[in-house]
Amino acid sequence: MKLRSACLVALLFTTPAFAVDPTGIAECDALLKRYEECSGELPPAKVHAAQKELLEGAMSLRANADDPKLRPALERFCVDTLAAMKAQSDIKACMSK
Image (cartoon, rainbow, N blue to C red; front, top):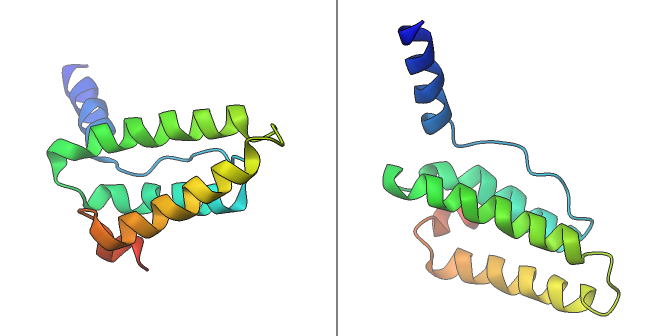
């Protein structure tokens, strides 16, 4: 039982990919998908924080995606964030693919 629990914990902390539900905003879905794919390339100490940020960001985007007043700003935010991550993040090579 201890070995099984240890294996599950190890799997949890070493598996960088997990599915993020779509936000309904194409630009934001592209950003989240790329970030999800690339977060595993971060140093191990940063992966958990990156995945937490990814999930929190996705929840916030989904919560606001249906507001027609916010949607254009969210689209711009996601485009600008992806461009910034391609230019100057720890995972810029992966984000640029």
